[in-house]
Image 1 (cartoon, rainbow, N blue to C red):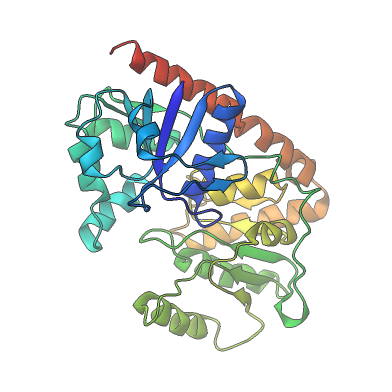
Image 2: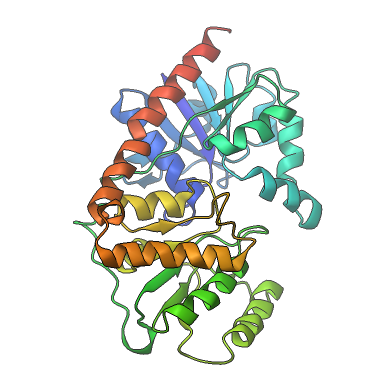
Length: 343
């Protein structure tokens, strides 16, 4: 099967790209001819290669059997496709919806427009998202669990980042979600301040802060962090933007904390590396800082006690079972074949 995946060729820069690349690589392992159609290259004259995956030109793209949209295909090509098109819904429904209202985004609007195309079906990678998407595209959405390349994210192959001097804490806690309208560190920072009252030596390391010049969000959050830490340099560890070696950081910390309930990229990568990840749940909601802080404290105390549930070996074993690329691609190929049978 020839499978064309549309997305920006942007190695090691986003969870969307890394997940798409892992899916394509597994499709190739299973005998399919799967490639990236680079939507940021308007000429499509370059052949680019990244860790077992390559891009394609327009002629190859036009002769694919199935089209997978991770990021939007140019309209001039999309209108001529009369074959199955599968849209992977990477973003959370909440973020897409709010971004259309409060930011200069049209992602949710675009999804609603794509519903009108009879060639298109949708796949969500998180079970919690299914009803949100299926409510606007009834019967057109399938849930297929996401994956991670656990051979690449192997704690035996990755050298842990060493936090030195005043940046080092006990425990070292990491926030590394890409900042979005519902994914910035605000709630985690508030929970951490309460946690630190019980564990004075703890440090919170924050990555993926905005870097654009004169970025209003960055300026405000810099000011806010100074206020909530009361200006103490013993509150936070490293406060940085995007880091291409974030896998080393995830490997080197004691805990990863996220306000996302879903198995996001940070959750899957950290888990594959064996690092404990703390997420909100129905009892320890991140909207309640004290309850979330109590969950962080409980997990840390269980780790100190040697509870095998939170051992790095057990966390990695569970991740290899839950986020296996073969399972994801087996389900995707079944979805493709079902769509092809209707042509």
